[in-house]
Amino acid sequence: MFTLPDYISPDFTEDFFQKAPNVRTMPAPLDGVVPENFYATTIYPEYFKIHDNWRLMSESRMDCVVVITDDLPQAIEFRNVKKGDSVVVGRQEGGENGVYVDHFAFSKKPNKGDNFSFRTSNSRETAYSRDYDRLYELLEFEREHGYILWVLGPAVTFDQDSRNAMAHLISSGYVDALFAGNALATHDLESHFFNTALGQDIYSKENKSMGHYHHIETINRARSCGSFEKLIEKYKIEDGIVSACIKNEIPMVLAGSIRDDGPLPGVYADAYEAQDALRTHTKKATTVICLATQLHTIATGNMTPSYQVVDGVVRPVYFYSIDISEFVVNKLKDRGSLSSKAIITNVQDFMVNLQRNLPE
Image (cartoon, rainbow, N blue to C red; front, side, top):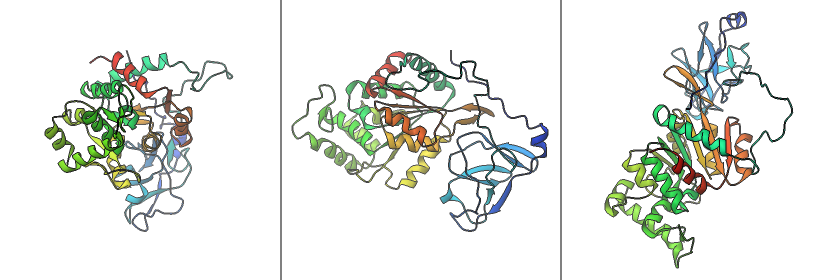
């Protein structure tokens, strides 16, 4: 049975916190421009002393500035700052500037093991049996109590079993939002029309004659309908990931790229509009699972804090990166998302394992 770890907040009755100064702010000089010596956010719980009260920022995001509005700290992207906003300044994080970053959230217990040991990080040599078991328990818990965001690369649709498994998880309530690019939805729909992905049979892996037309033909049909809903209705699509999302009213954020064909209707062509749309879900996400998509994984990781405040309780955000490449899963840690957990495996096998071991 999965249980959330307790979060022990700093003791703000301590003399140091009581004597610490209130946070300092300066007005933003222009829209999208902040004062010199601005404070930038991290992934950790951050407290700001406002009118002698330490307040936790409830919806954080790395690399934002902090604007104080109605005595509450808010993480705001630089581009969204308005002239005159009260922006927090000062770069100390230990309380001496009225800002305290809790770097050891959820890990305050001392390590009882030896200081030196082998194989402390995940690699291609790691056995993931226990990781899978913990993930099954976590997803069962989150289905009832959390918000599960999936970040999918198109490889999920390249295999019949993994595509079916993802659709099954959506219908079974293990998906609250989905983030992907144009390709994921394109090849999922291509699989319905032609049983191929990029012209290759999703079961036999046989390349079909003239198969390179299939994804473009799929995009054309979707664009002629104007929306996923109308496409599914016209062609009576009952299978796949897109259909499962539409039928179960699961929001999809599809972000376009410079190389996209089409794109499909509903794909965000503006990167910042896509980022804003995704942030509505990273603000709520309590578990994030990223499959075989390096850039979307890093983007999501950089937007996702290590904690959420749910019903007044601070809890961790669980972040999984799954890829066959050891380089890809480790790269996220190099981009600041230190709370991510890596599973190095084929994503098709990963999906089938989840479906087989999660209850409906």
